[in-house]
Image 1 (cartoon, rainbow, N blue to C red):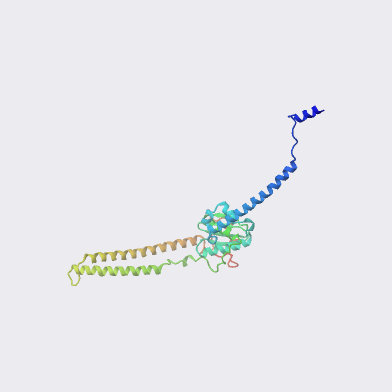
Image 2 (tube, rainbow, N blue to C red):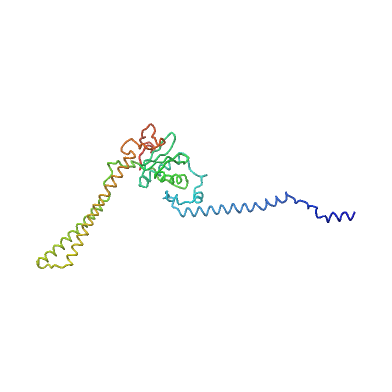
Amino acid sequence: MADASEEREADPTEEPAPPDESAASSEAETSSEPADEDTDEDADRSLEELRAAVEEKYDFENFGPDQMAEMTAEEWEAVFDPETWITGSELLDRLEADVKDRVVRRDVFARVERLDNPDRLVAYSDEGYVVVYPDGSTEGRGTVLRDVEPLVALNSMEEYDPPAMPEGELLPDPVDVPQGSGEKGNLLIQIVAGVQLLAALALLGAWLLGVLRVDPFAADPIILVAGLGFLLIGFFLFLMVANARLSDRFRAEEYRNRLRAIGIDSEERPEWLPPEVEWPAGELEEGGEGRGEESA
């Protein structure tokens, strides 16, 4: 009997008893809970630090397409929380006021329309269009889409305060566009140029009298050089004024053509726009909570 028990104890082929799996899993769960809590705290701390860095880096009061293109995906997710986004008609109201305000300040060139069935905000120019729906989705192309997309994100944030809705006509009639806005500056340059020419004539006249040996004038070459210098300066200033006026006329005519292209002087609209931009019943609505107004 003793020999048999000793053989059993010395048998190397006998397998040890398996460990208690329930106890091991309990210990693993207990040890993993603090690790998970530490990970969550580190993630929250990292997100807050990234959000603070992004808010310091970008000026969201003047947020535009260039800043939007610079942002990384991590920065975008840190600042724009989709769970707190504003949607629906409130989003379109805020966006309409913001876009029209930028049109008044000439940051955006577009004609803006708030349309029904379905409720949507439409902006278009001679270089593209955008349609914004209550859920914040957009469709379009061109510079208008590029200008409006960042504004959709901004007006979806509760922290952003859009400007008040502008009043009155936002786009001028093409015939009311002035030739130029720098006439006072041009007039001042013309006065300076005239003084330069008078000084040139006086110096050249004195030099000519000196050549003719009329006392007390003398044919001093310095007088000749000074007179020619004043003459060249005067002609240069007059040429600069002429070029500025020509440029103003060109820009004014270009602006008139852009206004005509989006139908400011008529009820018609560009033929290339898709059906989503159609006006209700084919007509502009006049007045009424900013609907049917023109903006650029």
